[in-house]
Image (cartoon, rainbow, N blue to C red; front, side):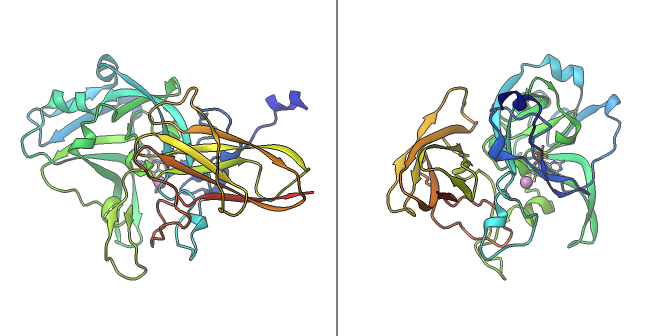
Length: 355
Ligand SMILES: Nc1nc2c(c(=O)[nH]1)N[C@H]1C(S)=C(S)[C@@H](COP(=O)(O)O)O[C@H]1N2
Ligand SMILES: [Mo]
């Protein structure tokens, strides 16, 4: 049995190929750094073609000295290495009821890796931020038509100056100790910890400091919570990840023997840290605390949790998991429905049968 482990491997689950959107086999991820082979892929456009062998990074806009950095320039700056969860804002979209349009992600639009790079702050300071600067726009090399706007756009997003200046917001050049794989943004990618991953722009083309609000479609139309089906009332931008958890074992609809079973999974949040994960085996009437393994987890990474369950009686069981964080946020029993299906974080659940 065990000798199979080295050559029997999980795979990504394909959602679309042009552009490439594939999810991670999250229930089978046992490592806290996900290899690029199993790291989810989310793209709005086809992969970009650009001369990455003669790559330069320009920084301009509301700065006192426009800059052009070579890769070697970047390697010489002080670096920062961080392990972070990247979760697509559309992770678990398929679970919304009523259903919403868009990529029907199950639970695997999430992965974790170690990224190394230069804090964006250092680059901005070397260019000199002008007074009145508000946002920093990062544009990727990929672009394409949007069906709604009848125009070609690049993938570009802004960060508020405060987030851009956070010492953990980095321009990454390494992924798990190697140059970033092309699919994940080679040669340079923005990494914005704690925010849903739409903020972490791949294949950086240029960085522009702005003294006004950027209104590109990937933040004025997409990545906005619209709580109502047919009007824009109470719309607000998608930013930090919600507190969340995913059960990895058992698998949904498993048939198990009576006896002891380990229920385990991951939990993560975009603010503070995970303080508690609870499990319910009686449809949410009572909750028991799971054990959290913090070993190897850092400020921005997921934690692993487990709960030993002795299933004495035959029957069907619903297994639920609920995480809480240090900002007193707790997974709700019902998700916050929004028209574009972002930020799903209702209590996770699966069913099993004990025979
Ligand atoms: N340039 C560029 N950056 C991008 C995107 C994109 O389409 N183009 N997609 C964003 C979204 S929505 C997500 S969820 C993550 C996915 O990163 P991954 O493909 O490395 O997993 O990249 C973000 N950065
Ligand atoms: Mo995403």
